[in-house]
View 1: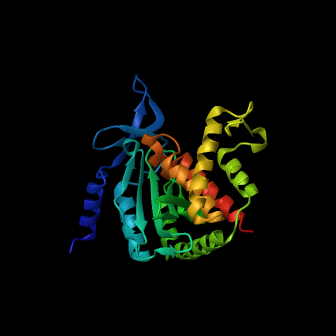
View 2 (view 1 turned 60 degrees about the vertical axis):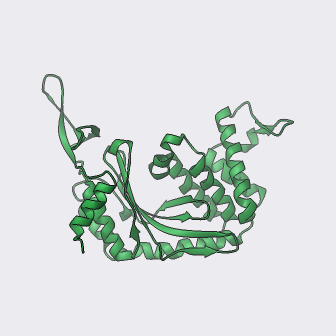
View 3 (view 1 turned 135 degrees about the vertical axis):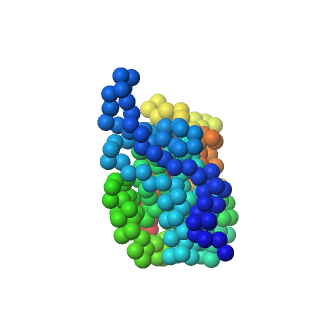
Length: 296
């Protein structure tokens, strides 16, 4: 049987993450120190971002070691890690393969996941998230676990904070049950036109009262950009598609948004990155929060 160290090495190799990040002084042309540092990738010497002296690097090997600890604690199985933007952002998912939730009334099977994300460009914290993957249509929903300790800044005491957050990791167990209950309620709760309007307004950040339709049914507006009008149309089409077989319920509405972010949102070449770290991830989280708000 392979040791943990051998498994970590193999996982890093398979995911293209077997390299370190070092902090190196950034100098002016005359050699004067700037007080800033470059986060440099060891294998190809590319500078992933800039940081200050206080910034603490959390290595890829530490992220994978963390994933193994979580796997032992929760029973989730680790997937191969992912690398984005030449290593500026990295992630690894753990799937609850024995924790599948089957919802026969809407034809869905939901797989619960834990996601660990980290950045080497100084733009974000180390984070743990609990999410769900709708296997019937590969729509992914991820939301950060509702605990301050699961978003940890790159400072000198980050490892102590991480140890505190992982002690027992009871937050995963409580959030798991909460998410299951919320999905049950979303399937039961019927939606109205006002709910669809509220969801679209929240995701696109637009006032739908400013928008009309022409004789052919296309959205028109003098105040709203063509880009946003096209986005509204695309989201509306995704909502109609998802609700056509999940039903006119909050679950179908939520999956309309995640269908859009998974298959249509942003540019093809950056969509996966955005689903994990960027605007599409924030849209997923906002949609989930709006959907939960409709259950009241």
